[in-house]
Length: 128
Image 1: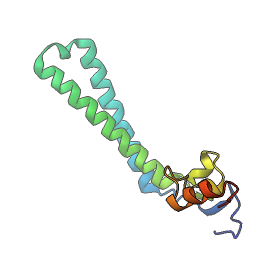
Image 2: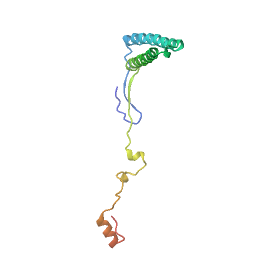
Image 3: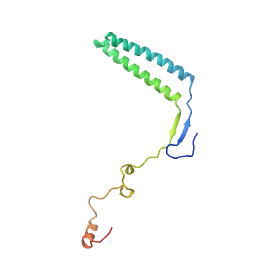
């Protein structure tokens, strides 16, 4: 759905989510795996597995697996259950952000033109 309204904040495109059953089953299974790993990690912390060198690496690896699993859950959720919405935003030019007038956006010369300096010295009321 594309509307012709290009005003600031107008919804330009809206595609509803797919909401597939396979994605739902995948999210549920990944959540069960997540709960198991979080429980095992918590038990390992309470039991003191981190005191040995191997146990410390094991807990670190388990924490990495927990975050990777969570990333896949969020990826599936965003892809399958959130709508695809494009909102129109007007990009301002950088000189507008600095409150500079449009005629001054390229700045001023640090060394004025030599011929203008001569004209100004000879005729003080000379205008560029």
